[in-house]
Length: 208
Length: 401
Image 1 (cartoon, each protein chain N blue to C red):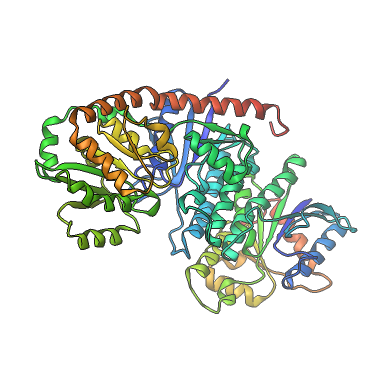
Image 2 (image 1 turned 60 degrees about the vertical axis):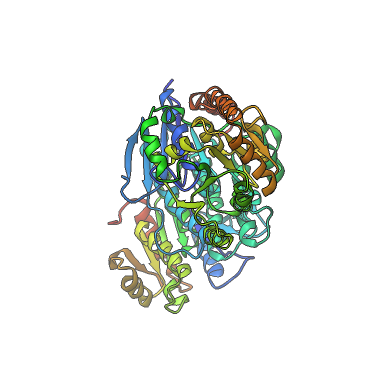
């Protein structure tokens, strides 16, 4: 199986806890003989590299250097994520089984790649704009929420880290509960669940 | 070999008309279709327009253009591109990938064009109709720089960059540091047929709605923004009125409207200047045919399509000697050129045309001939098709083919 993970942070770029989580996930996947690619952002350490454990990293930077906010920054970075993913896709004769997009940043790329190349994607929800913005609903927050919604609508599966998040995704976005899997990040055992979900999505066994 | 297939990306397409890109893409697309090119247009939706239709042989797809309130225009553009790219991707997939060329018009569709290029590995062409650095007369804020860099990004990713005048070629080359061989000049055009209708009788009545019989009509058509130089015309109004009895008709909307009409009021000239706002095509065309002189006083003008339209309507033109206008008009032959941002010079040009009927007739007749010969859409579509063929020839030898 060949999996591409999207994350806007990955060591050495660490913004929050997502970077370490994704690194651990990628390491475990590689250990389990899954060919794992991580497409991520770095300001200047760009291009492809291979981690000592065999995980393949593809770092891209933003072709538009000046920005007025995180939203415009994210939205112009997505095309580079698409370019990197397309490189992997065409190099492997289209044998990419699924994309696992962490948080909302690269959802536009995941959706386009699904529509264009038929690669199914999982949306791993780390946090929600509703919580981050404490209920503020400015046009800026609304735009991020609309991207979160798009991801939830187009994804084959959602993975969340707690029952609370499952309830919140259900409450805010009205996503059917059976579309949302809870995988609690524990040092042992977490991967088994994720692998099952990956396999189901890759084989097209999900209801959506 | 099957027909050449092109996918046009544009943020405006009739009936959605904001600026010059809409009529440009419409005329280019249908002229290409007439020549046997299969054209798909992906554009923003518009109230009352259908999501999918075939218009003069062109397949038009209108996509949801993100209708939540947006923080600002540029952010809206990027959000709209998320939808446009998604829908266009689904369309290309449904066609089995049978699209040969992607053609993007301005930075407004840069993201969608670039994204589609990479996921389908198809050649991307860009037409640069205008630039932020030109519109703003420099880059002063991060907001403008972001747009400027998005334009640069589009030209970087494009296989070829089309501009509609020699002036724009050199401007774009300078603004983005592009190599000469990446740039191609294909002029803009005007659809002459719509001006040829004989309607002299109804025009007389129509004219009375706008001006007294003894008043000459001075017409301005354009967005009421700084770069269009409408304030230069307003400052020329009293100077013209010293010599000629005229009515100034200003068609279009923009952020300077309030400011300009206030200025007119303080001058005590409200009865001589009429702001019509945005007009439909039919009314505008009639007005252009009635105009005793059409003025284009732009400070920055990549091409100057309104000058061509006036020339097609056989209205004599007075233009500022800048950008594309300098190339369209030959002074004293098919129009009058005046100094840029200079109300005295503009007034001089207007007075010259309005007080010498023989001269006015001579330049407008020459202008009409020029438009018919040099700026017709069949010729332009032909040239554009050749650009597609050159790109496809190069593409066929590339690693992506």
